[in-house]
Image (cartoon, rainbow, N blue to C red; front, side, top):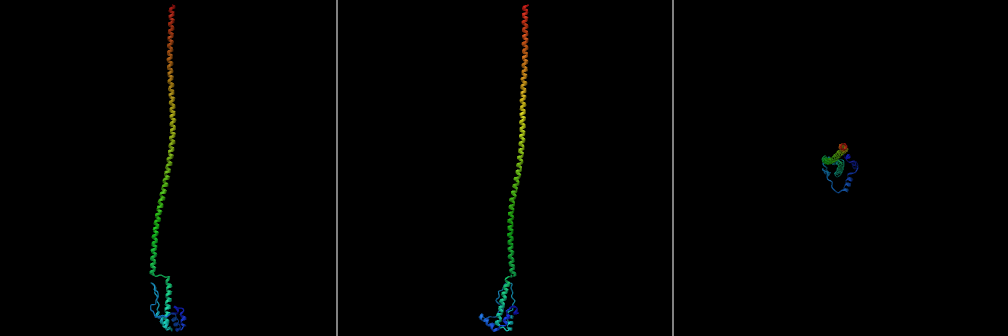
Length: 232
């Protein structure tokens, strides 16, 4: 058991107990006492099963003195403690694992909360941007509709204006034609009136001429009859 735990114990078997004790006494002046509970740094969850008393008895049975056996056992305990410190330095206990798990879960919850807040903020931002874009699109649609309505009204107004112009032209032409016809009618009426007046004047002149002729004839006849009576 000693050879398995400490490889250099093979060399200690060839050293005399007196020389080993002298070498140890030269390095320290402290009296070594047997300690059933050695000063090993204990960690939570670490258990060291090492029967130091049995090892000391085994060393005493193999020819070592009790001081040498205690030195060897202390060295073994320190080596085992150092090895366990190295091994357990990279290991965690169940409590530490649960604590770390709780920390990780709390961090995950915080990250989820931050992600939810960020998602909500981004979602609200996207909603605001979509609302702004929707309003812009509605404005563009309204502008397009208004432009179409204005173009339609403009075309209708142009058509109405052209129709009114054509109607006005036709009315002007009709009025001009009516005025011309009225002038023609008035002219014809004047001509007819003047012709009728001339005819009346001619008739009156004819009557006057006939009267003058009849008077002249009667006068001539009277004169002739007078001369005839005178001569008769």
